[in-house]
Image (cartoon, rainbow, N blue to C red; front, side, top):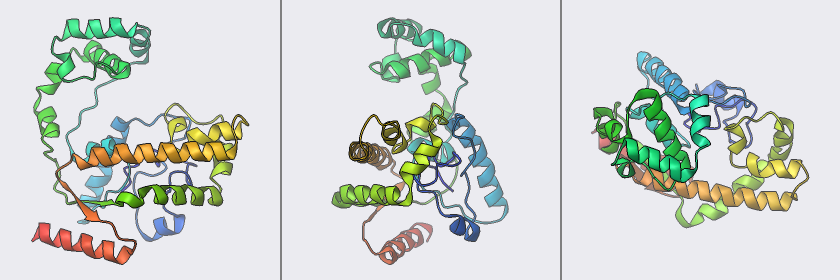
Length: 274
């Protein structure tokens, strides 16, 4: 089961490293190719479809392997994350506010908002105001709920064993090698075929965002490649920081031999389930 936020989009295959069709015929995969790249596929919808897929796996008496990608999408499946409604007209009105005025309005609604919202991030301030406008729930009230407490304390709604592989110092070389492999596999052509068809979310996918200017002739391929590798490293750093905070995930010492990694994972699972 993929928790990659971009593998949900059809036709974005090479740049998101989707499993091959042959592999998908051999082993059932879930949460792939759910939306057209022109459409946004929010995490709330991902959660709904992911829970339905997990229920189906449970009904078969099988176990799911969740892998990827986005920490938020992972936690949306195993934790009681709540995704409040959104309204484009309300959001547009709030985004038109001066950032300082938006912060002032949020603090007027909730004097303790800074304890729950990054007030230096205009996007998060606007989102907090939007939620308060639509639901009447301020950041402090939302944080006081049982589900919010469970999320903060990493109390999963499902029993699971967490495993992570941290390549450590080899990460930079692996990222560069992986991206060059994507280019050889036809990533630039894939991006060219999607030009003008990527929606707000899909257009921000790492690799696609940096190669679109190459397709448009605004930068060279070498410049786009370098930008994509930098963006991939930055994403990997954010992912590692996010997942390392989760006490339920045990990191396996990296080894280039996949058999060694599998053995270490099996040993950990046996220890936890014993």
